[in-house]
Each structure stands twice: as structure tokens, then as C-alpha cells.
Length: 230
Image (tube, rainbow, N blue to C red; front, side):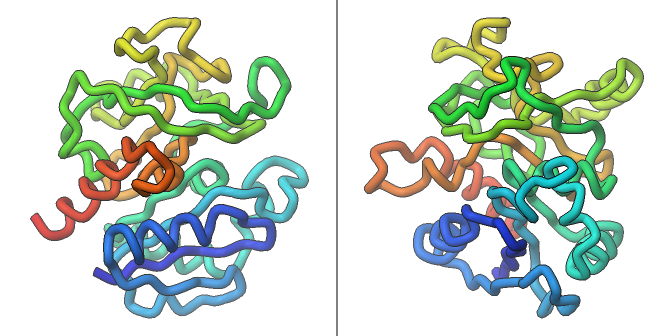
């Protein structure tokens, strides 16, 4: 497969994502600068974490106006696979490709630590290989990761199985204590109604290499490849 990784001024997880896709998953990767408009015939697009445009105004609020995003939106609207992690998730919400918004953490602090998540279902491109009751230890690093959507939107998301991951403890219990940022319903990742645009705050690319001593995130990339290859 051929994947594109979008790079904005302030992206700082782009090389991490490229490394996992290229060296761990052994896929072809092209770098897509934010001023580009040509997607170079990629099969899927990844928006990495970081601080696009310094997170001025709101995280992702300026990045959505980059020339590349017009092409990404067109690609997504035609059914193309798009996946945003952390800041990439924020950009996708700001662009209207994903429902809801990412707000300041409820403690108003930047949080960087390992947390646990569990899949809400195993029917998506990100979760199809993950056992339903499995928990994954994945790092987070964000100041605006509190997912929010209104009651009606959440209701529709539950019906459409658009909630991908929820924060939990190591045993899989979903509770207030296991919610690191105050996200509504412990939501850590979502997809759009057409199930081709995905976003999550935890960083699976930081938990995919044997050298790091944690490969819980690799199964998410393996699930993505399976969704393409079948």
C-alpha cells in the first residue's frame, strides 16, 4: 500500500508515524507538505500529532485552512481512508470530517503518560483485529484532548458504532478514575458515519516498535492494513 503522511508547521510526530508505516509495517510512504495539493495517488492519509501552527486559536483551527486539507477533504468525501492521531484528530474535527470537538483537559494541564483504552467494537478499520475485551496500553501527550459532543450527536454515534475506543483501567473497567482528560463517556477515538475517517487522541505509533518495550499499538496498524488487503 502507499500511504501519505501530512506534515504541518509544528508537526512533531510525523517521523514517528512514517517510521512505523515504513519500517515496522513495511509500507510505501510519501510526505505531504501542508502547502501541497497533490496527494500523489495514495491509498490512505495519516495526520500525525504535534502542534500545528503552534496550536494558536485552537488546536487544529489554523491547519484546516492549509491547501493540503482541501485535497484531504475531497479524498475523504470520496470514501478515502483518513486517520488522524492527537493533533491530527483535532484537525479532522475542526475540518468537519469527524463529529465533536477536542477541548482543554479538565485539569487545564498538559498530560503525558501511558493510559489504557479498549475498543468499543471490533468492526472498524482500526479495531477489526482487536479482541473485544482486550485493553491496550498506549501513550497520550496532549493539552486539549477532552472529547465533547452534544447528547444527540452521541446518541447517533452509539447507534452507528462510531465510537472506537474508550479510556479504561488495566482490567478494562470504564470509570471516572480511568478518564485522563474528562472526555465525555471516556471517549478516546471516533470515526465518521461512513466509517472511512478515523481519529484518536492516544498515540499508537509510540507503542508499535519492539525497541520501546510496548507494542500494543501495532495491532491498530495491522487492523488498518487488513481493512485494505482483506
